[in-house]
Length: 229
Image (tube, rainbow, N blue to C red; front, side):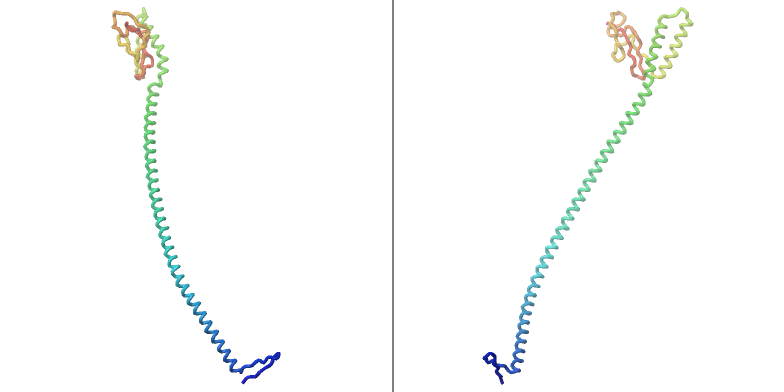
């Protein structure tokens, strides 16, 4: 049964209370169905989205694994190169050190030989100046002996002193250069004049102007001589 109401001259039907309740239940049911449909669509979308996401994750993981393997290979190659470079550098350094050691030892041996030679020269020729200063004394002895002396004992004393002095000098390396009658040798003789003579052959020393001397084999004063023409 319906009632009617009039509002502003228009009749508005008022439905029965049961009908209204049924209509409300139907509206709620339709809303639930619509919601379930929406939820179903969303779930399918989500499911589809999850499937796509898994494939993307798998591809990303595969790419990451490939990049990791590549990085590991590059690191291994770099490590091998570094090890090779280190080995080469170590070998080169070892060769350089060996060469420096050999060169240093050679220089040290040369230094030892040079210093030993210098010491020998000092011992051998350290008295050279003293010997040269004594040359004048020996020359005066020779002149005195050549002049002779009326007092035989006095002359004999001069000869004995001269002999004693020469023996002492010989013990220290002094040696008289042989000249008279020898072939002229510019290494030991100094020619002052060429002289005609029948006593000696040409090129021979025919007269000694001044005696020459050697000290331990080294000429410290050449003999001044005349050479036969």
